[in-house]
Image 1 (cartoon, rainbow, N blue to C red):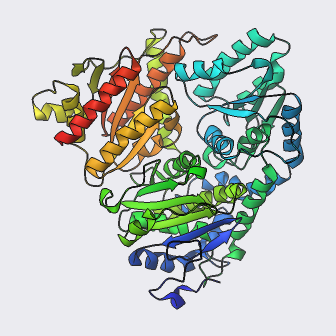
Image 2 (cartoon, rainbow, N blue to C red; image 1 turned 45 degrees about the horizontal axis):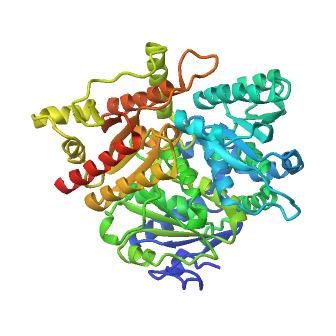
Image 3 (tube, rainbow, N blue to C red; image 1 turned 90 degrees about the vertical axis):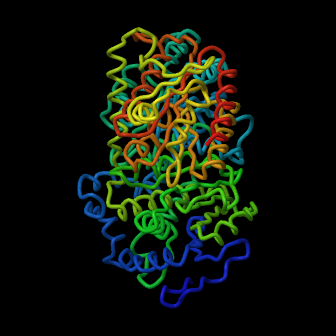
Amino acid sequence: MTPSPSEQGDTMPNPPADSILPTMPATAGGVSFSFHLPPALQQAVSGAWPLWAGPKGRMARLWAGDATLWSGHDEKQWLGWLEAPEAEQAKLQAYDALRDKTHHEGITDVVLLGMGGSSLGPEVLGQLFEVRPADATGPWPRLHVLDTTDPATVARVGKQLDYPHTLFVYSSKSGGTLEPSVLFDCFWDEAGKALGAQKRPQHFIAVTDPGSGLEKRAHELGFSAVYLGNPGIGGRYSVLSPFGMVPASACGLNIRAILESAAAMERACRPASLPEGEMVAGPLMLGLAMGLAVTGPGRDKITIQASPALQAVGPWLEQLFAESTGKDGTGLLPFEGEEPGTPDVYSDDRFFITLRLKSEKPDQRLVALAKAGHPVVDVVLEDLSAIGGAFYGFEMATAVAGSVLGINAFDQPDVEFSKVETRKIMAAHGTSGGAESEAPFCVDGPLSFHAQGALKAHLAKRGQQPQNAAAALGALLELCGGRDYFGLLSYIDRTDTHAAWNQHVRQGVRDALKVATAAEFGPRYLHSTGQAYKGGPNTGVFLQVTADGPSMPIPGRPYELGMVENAQAQGDLDVLNARGRRALRVHVTGSLEKGLAALAQAMQAALKGN
């Protein structure tokens, strides 16, 4: 049992045998949270705990749906996730039936058409689990998550499919999200060509909220099944609902163990499990620590470092933190996928969360970071099935942090602004095949550079226009430093090669400028970190990368898929500029690989110049 704050004094209890950090262990659902916090932050968390624990504490108010814990608006109607694990356990028979059906019908590929919360959770589950049920014979389906409008990506996935053995999952809470809607049009048409009109509907299922347009359309088209979610659960909190469980079941995952872990964490977070004098609930402690780190010392760069086995969790956690809290000029700014570094490459705005399996050795670099005064929270899973408890725990921590920050942790107001701008651009340009932007201020071989807003004003103030790519990038990097962060927003095919390119560029920026870095693929980040980029603190410096893409008509629509992607890129850039963000767009013409190589070389030269 963990000592009370008054008993701990200035010392931390001895760490468990497999921990490398002083710790206050808190374990539930196969997930343990170990904390190493600077003294001032530890004192703040200890002081806040009694306000949250006990039968009349803030956690009891949270479970009662008290919206005044956040902004006092509509938060109560978005708390369906609190009891989702137990609700989903009641549906296990239906999920088992879906699992058995896809297996016995010889389905080899499950294609998820979704965006944001409808795609990131299932993507985690699809990538984490390789072991299927013990009674399984033969292969189980592989999961393809399509959360993009990039025509090269869509074409690449389409070529891998054997349609008679493919199941499509059209997933959208509202039923009106642009990206899965146009993707459905593309694959519904292709499936008709491959399967015929009569067999085609049996290869489609839908996951949506009751009464949505998608529910109606799926029934009209004769989909094999329609699974309904809980309207009281927002997208990023929906992984432990049909939006996560349906695609996971279709791929043969052990849903029971995942939900058991989540239910155990749910019970640990209930008010009755939180005595006032003992700090025992990891999610509550994490939420308090993150929120107080922002409001106190300004450590808002939540750096997520996952072990190889849990690498897939990072993007889901990134969305949860960013979209929930990045608003009203504040928020948790998450950064996943950065290569761990030594303390000298990090500024004092960092807060580290590490994720690993118990069977994996901890990264010794954490010790150096903790000794350097950075907050470090080590989250350890007993096994992969404990991901259910981790999902729930992080959701609770996010809700608590949102309360500390005084914001609505369940809306995403700034995501809609980019959607509006995208629709305006598409309406204005019709079938032109692309979205127009201002003329480039610099062209260097295959690279053309465009500036608006804050960067355009900066260039005017400098006087002389950059004459080459390195100088153009240097003008942007001049504006990045201190407690800023750098965001690389790439609207290109999300291949392993391009992901490695993103990593190479971000790593160079981090090491040279000592700032946090994000490496994103558009348009998927629009439903994730895009909220924080536009609604959070104005500390982001952004490089948007766009490129020429292949032609891909959308059946029944007067525009091509590439035009949608271009409109999304330009629409988001317009909103970033309208919010006073520092942003530069570079467009690659011709060979994408040659253009990216030239851009990386120019970035290296620009960093040396800065």
